[in-house]
Image (cartoon, rainbow, N blue to C red; front, side):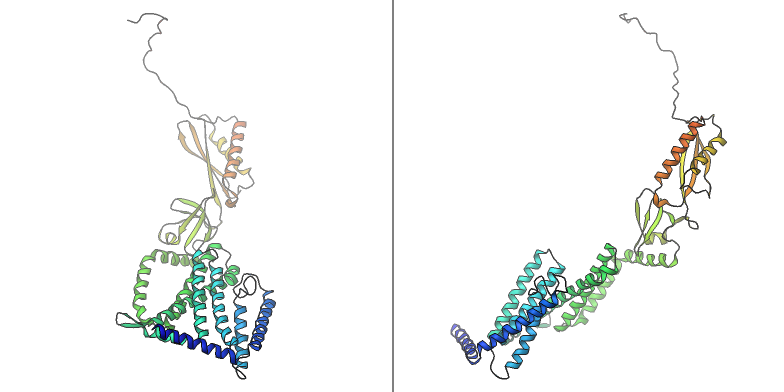
Length: 433
């Protein structure tokens, strides 16, 4: 066996040496240097108009994909011309070398762009490099067809199906290459289209992930079909997966459908003041899955759109978009009710943000233990500018006007009633019987 392998290696070496002797090495070397230099110059010229770090041009022109592809095309064309007049050796050997370099550069650049800080991608690049250079060496030595036949002779049984080792390797390589192409297309779409079309960072992330998932799925289907896998066998699995996915995501689907219903019916619109499940505020945004309600104190509530469809929602002021604010105060029982009401309303009207129509209203709300409890209602048209600040200004005006009018502002009082007599104090030092 060892003698046979040595004889095969000797035959390969003799054939390579014979081809080398028949060819004009210096002429091929000059042609090779000329076409490689031409490819480098063209890529250098074109790379000035593109940003550094792209897949086509890389950081230094030579580490992009375009340089080995251009050199490969020129070398292949030169080989096709020279082989008509004489045997070729260097040009034939350069073709697999440049092809392997193009594959390595393409995969490395795409993985760097898509996963810039991934350590696992560096390992993938090394594996791809070893496989590509190994295939190039086998191609140059002329034993690649024999190796492929040996791999085709090794059959593996998967149930009732027979798959050769060559089919598995070709399928893995084809799937990997197609997935890399899908990643490249998704990165290009993200950079050229989504960055300009979608300004919201969250929506852009969703669009990028969805685009990448769809392209990877389609690319995987193409790769499996290319290596001879029957895709009809996946239909049953796909149907079961779709049913499970639908059951698991029915709430999410309900929210998306409800979002479209809310947007189409326009029963609730951006700017409406609503109360949902005890939370009151103004609608600031309506997404396809949820609605954002912002309260006057700055807090935001993320309400699923299904809630807006299935539960009771109070649209506080739909026609004129005015926002009601309330505040209260307690005064003494001997105060004039009509005077206090007038003072409270005048204090609210004195603020520039308080609307005159509808006019502020003051009500005697309750007979509290410490005094008469009044509640003042007034309206503003710009709640986004703050509600606490205008309520504070009205309270300060109320306090100043009530003090100026001599109205007693009540404060908590408690009456302590003592029943029975306390014993008389004893002289200091007296004996206790």
